[in-house]
Image (cartoon, rainbow, N blue to C red):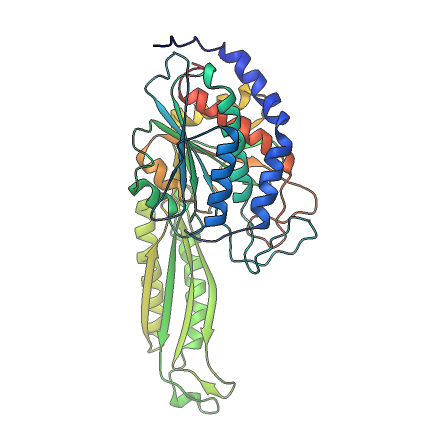
Length: 405
């Protein structure tokens, strides 16, 4: 049996990670552009899956496993050294799906798929994790333990992480780490916080039901349309006057629909939107508050109301020790770390991972002049941040495996 080598000194290894990542920057950027040009939505992303599998084979990482419930890719990179990481597994995750959005860009790698765009940086996430795979393959002799790479479709509202958990992606995993690119924050800076980092999300659908009729004789009707304004105002009151700011809630009415013609008062008026909360308990309270406001408005106008609330992703909550470990790893490779003073009210299905294993998610700034924000049709990334993300993935993995303790 071949004797395992002692790992290189952790300080030296981490010091060179960033330099090595920059040495493969052209490949990382080319991979990002290739994925960006061919975006796919939801749980079925077969072209992206094939691209990832081909790249892993080129790198020399074998044994990749594909999912059944979605076009996921999971593979393990096993260290050949001896050390505290033996018998431990750390997971690194990248989401890979795109959004239903038409891109407006002059870049040569603009989306070729009409109405679909990588507007949330998942193309960069996949490219960074492929870069990390290449670094890990070259570092096998210098770490002990297993690094599991998780390429996940279906983050944008489909709960792909939950499906991968059911298929065993977390089996034997001791800790998990993820990076989310952020084009509205300074490039190359790492941002995060312990505790609630991102909100949980729910969607609501409210229908006010009255009685329709001719627009010239509203007194013969029970017009549901005037109920919409007080309902929206009531939600604002709940947010401002009934909610602890440390456990805040954000109600957003994002769609209103009523009527079929200019001279008809309709029998129904509908609105829908989202609820963002920072805790599971607040999520339940917020749903009850929304129902109370809708029912009160309806009763005051002689209307009936139907309310439906559907819970989505839970809040993303970073664990204290893994968070500190990840940020220390970021500093060790030479990245600047900035603590976020408060949570971001977006939602992420990495939350399901963090409900099952200790771990952390961080933002990596990728701001570039002239680029739009996340979920914008003009979203752009500073590609110079991508090799930094690849190095950070590997540094965090080594730290979680306790080779750097």
